Amino acid sequence: MNEQELLHEVQLMTEILNQLHQDVNEMKEEVEDFQISELVTQVNELIMKMEDNFSRINNEIDLQRNELIQLKEQINTKDQDHSVNPATSEFRRMQSILQTSQNIETKKAPSTNVINRNTGKKFKSKKHK
Image (cartoon, rainbow, N blue to C red):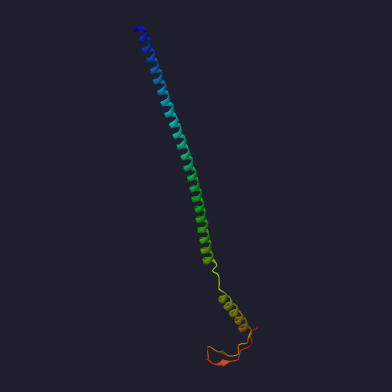
């Protein structure tokens, strides 16, 4: 082979090598882009999961807050019921009924022995109507 042909072959090989080098660089960029794209996808999925978790946690907090408010209202209502209108026991109601009936009977019955305050002597009084 002559020198010119060799020079041509070397030049051709150099072009091929340059093209290969360029192809390799493009492939590297694609791989990096793919990895970045995959990473972005994974990060997005993670963010979505976190948002779902935060949403669920916020819902649970709202439910617990509402339950707490209801419990406070129930406690306040019970406190008001006890302070404003305390419930009387069955014993107290029966006692009140008996006292009322005794008072009625006492008013109906005539008073027979009355002491005069001025003299201190007993005398018979008239029937009260």
